[in-house]
Length: 188
Image (cartoon, rainbow, N blue to C red; front, side):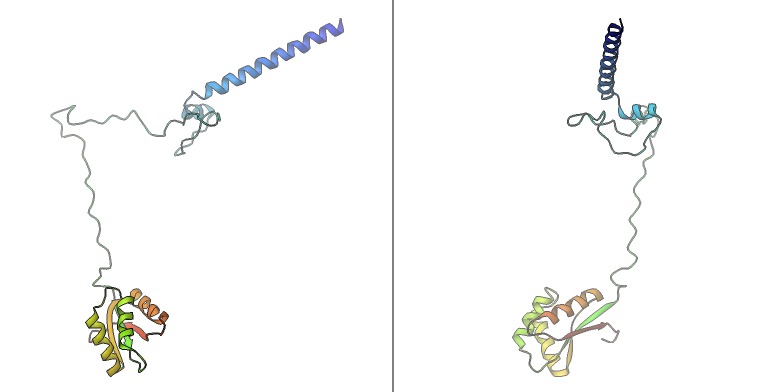
């Protein structure tokens, strides 16, 4: 009699375990069809501003959660109530001007230094390449001649960062073209 009762209880336990497994599978499948925000509220932990997530943990192909935006917002339009002016629409504010205008930015002189070993053609060509569009061929020639006669000549006037960049570029040339930069003064 003992073995028969043990068999019955073991069969009963197996049946109960199969039932629980089936219920668990059905509940998991049913959760896939319940919107994510509804499940979160029932579970007592609502996550605001979260990214949409896959629901139910079903892997590929499972639907995305509902978006976290209100969909039952009613907006009155002038067409619904012809006598009303409608919702007030804010016009965009004008964009504030930059605090520093180009006229207020301190300008710097890029100065070509004279050297007896310079070749006029090479120096003028290098100036045209480095200053790319900031100087014309005639200005480059006159700048070279002035630097040779007086020791230095202002090649171009630009913002400080540009001036420093140009001086670095001239320093990388082979053979080197000697230049420097300094703040522009009112008398220059």
